[in-house]
Image (cartoon, rainbow, N blue to C red; front, side):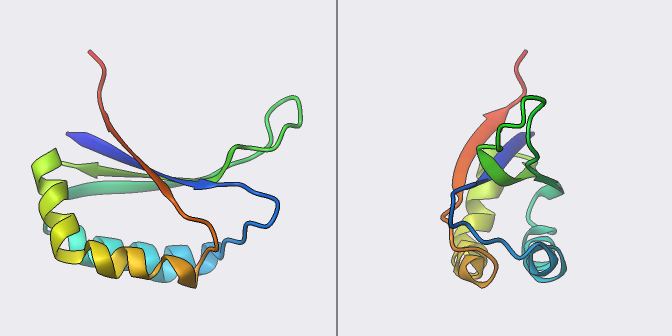
Length: 103
């Protein structure tokens, strides 16, 4: 199992339409990748820390895939459509980080 972190940087001029993200974008992700090895997705909204400091990322989404190969096939098949939808809900470029469980 691998986890892809999709990190949306929080900048002074960042915009993010959370309603669209949940109702449309994440539905697209599930519809297109659900049968291609996507096991789950979790969306988290950044909040200020205990010291009141703003979060580095406004939104972080964790996508769980059965393998890197499965993600590669899913991205090759539908990545352009999914990434093409990004400007519909934010003006920032997401950062992707690939992760596996540490032993």
